[in-house]
Length: 298
Image (cartoon, rainbow, N blue to C red; front, side, top):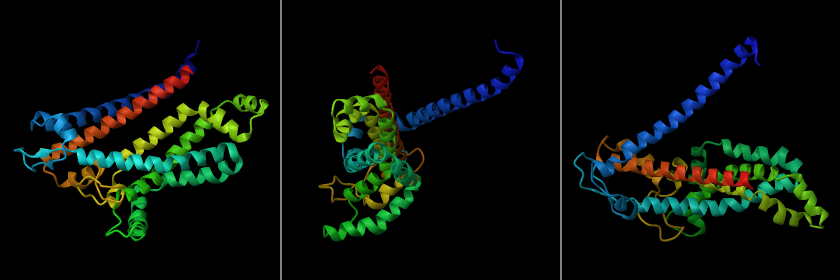
């Protein structure tokens, strides 16, 4: 039984935490409802269909309230998938190597030196990444591949890879640290070498956390707009290779939303892009929860 004094001390904090938690839930649901209302206008007001939006490459929405344009966003979707997928391919090996080094190879040096360095990368504003990419990476790729310009999918992917590296590294390192020490001791007792312990025991045991790290990194990449817009070229065309310019969903929203007439077809189409990004984020969150639930069952 709690006495009155204990109740008076604990209840204000409990109420404050509960209210804050409810506000976060309400805010998230409100954002989702707002995006749903605005994004569905493309289909309910201007009578376009979902298949046209997802699988057509004709992007010519009218900047009026009359409609009649084309809202095929396939170029933006393909640009986002290609750019983020390549960034993930580039970033994952370095992230895994850094996480293994700071947890299994040199945990003292990793904790004191590498982990703070990774944290610094996470705190750098995206505009700084974009500016460095624009001034250093774009000219380098232009000269390296003898291109007319360096605004390419590769440029955007390299910038994104650097931006998502801290997220994947940190979460992967936490997943590896969470593996019980008994697993390592048992493997060593059976005569395994350190690399065999890491490869055959530690990483498989941490696989759900590692998958979560990759999904969080991919989610971070999908949501990035400014840095990508500065180096990708913003050309409304399918890229013929990773050395071609293209555009993405976030780039289009960031570049065009300010100039689109409120309530017009163009404005509604951009809101539909935002709704699509929101749904992609929910999908990533759902996958993460599935992996977490699987880890608890295991």
